[in-house]
Image (cartoon, rainbow, N blue to C red; front, side, top):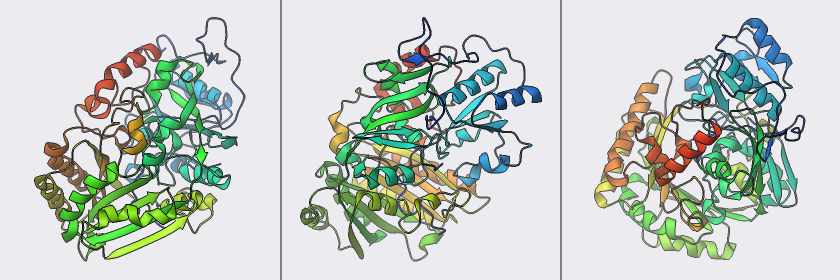
Length: 527
């Protein structure tokens, strides 16, 4: 399955896009790992060609060195002088189109990943790791500083054996939903078609079935990962459990390059979906009622609440709710009544019943197009959209003063010159709380919601969009503190370790010191 948003854009429909660009790669093909060599760690395989352990030679790569790397891999190595460079280097966010990596290695096996890491070590070349290319700060572009991009998007196969799905880390969510849903199976994941499974899962993984099924990482039973020493390791609760713990919620780019995931799927439910809209004048009542209702509702009910302004909403800012229900269709209205009986009547109400596959493709903006066209790449029907974003994780309901501060920022979007800007609040609770905060690296188990501040913008106004989203977050810090979601990474958050990982940061640092003691991986926000 390949997959690395009118043509439709996705961000205005449901911005549950997860990172998808900071950490991972998957084994969608290539040779099986060799048996462990004498003295190699349990669960790891030796890699022919040399390993990035020890001190780098520091010799800058020559043209002959790059050519040798290209001959040593199954995948493709694209340099700036090659015809495909200006396509393969692109991320999903066009604001980073000016980034120019040293080269892009599109890997086809774990051994390709190991070869790329060894080359980078031997020549003191930075590496950038890419799954779907959605990372908010653009670190997987590999341009600042110029780096060798390890592009895992070709590792995109999806296999189902009974209830277990083996998914390459470069698989995009649209192809995952199509393959699993067509066979009556399901996982909980995000709504954006082109997000890569790896970035999503490594940071935790929130989406429209989170409350019913848990985080995406909660379904993972094992992973294949290439660590800094070049070893191809299989990690699980039995094999290298500390690394397995860290890779479920610790984010990408710190500990290795994941090449595949094994996930335990669930029977695909029939989904009832709802879309509600109010004028922003109803927001004080709706927000107060929603934050009391959504995180503690029946586990089978998930919803997101958005307040959006900007030039797209010339008639005035709007408030909208999208929700999914996995329980009996006959009980859906009763579940919604627990909210609707306490708020003004919405101006728009739309409900539908879908199969799991069709619901997820609809959320992805791909209901009416073939899955092969559900991409922004060549032959795709989706359009890339420039955006800025940051996040919060909310542990406390907003007071009336907090709601006023929120709405002041939404109102400011109307005169901002931005295309669409505002806030999305995605309910947590449900099955997310069934695991203790230290049970995986995802620490925010008891939070009420994840929050995204987003802004889409016309060319030349990226700085203005950044100022808007960062200003929105700053306005809400007195109410929600500093907590943030690693999959919505923000390079401007100073105390990011505590914001993303809280009490789990110390253990993550210990795992990093074990598996990358020399600091080979240089993701900017490190443990």
